[in-house]
Image (tube, rainbow, N blue to C red):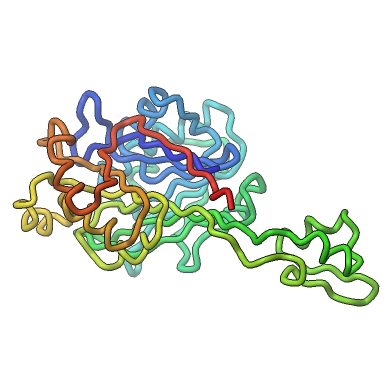
Length: 313
């Protein structure tokens, strides 16, 4: 199961019922936090989301409305006697490190009683099990380039699913039951000098779960490609009216309709709109613009959540 919660759905300026950008994915009690705008901690408490077991904060870019919640959250982790390392990943400009990108913000956090590991998001992604053993072995986080006014990333979380295990085939090859889990986890075993491969006893991989978080971006092919067949696309929709496409492009954002078109082109199953301009009092007013392109579009709100599960097959 994959739990997704929107913690902040505002862009640029927070509102009384709309904190700045943040979204959290949780699997097996471990979490990835996408962006950490001002008000993230308060929004998490309102949504009854515990961020203490966050392993990674994945930043899309370094504009204030996406990062100003970091110092307080890191201090809260320290006050909660966190001991596990915390990773912060994000984009970097040529010639700079992520330490330099985040330096002014991290200078406010003070001394921490746990290790903070800052890394530029690797091009080959992150295997979450290598960061914390509580993550499933087939859980991974990948990034893709988006088109904003600054160097920016979107993120794709995927939870793979192995094929069905053929107990009969394993038994015929003399594999004792105690070693079945080894094969199921993708490693081979040696039985009386004969190597048994996972492919010998496992069917083809089954459909897993995929969640895409856009970050700030204009309408672009990179986001569409990343969101291909996603179970959920959490997509920025800063501007409500179709007539605002030009200003959206100038500021590196999208309209509701463009978010809907992205989901439709990608063949996504669900679309949550987020990162609303403070000038949008009621996002539902503009939802028809997105629904005209993608009927399953939904307006996000602080505290909106869902649980995704594997297909029963």
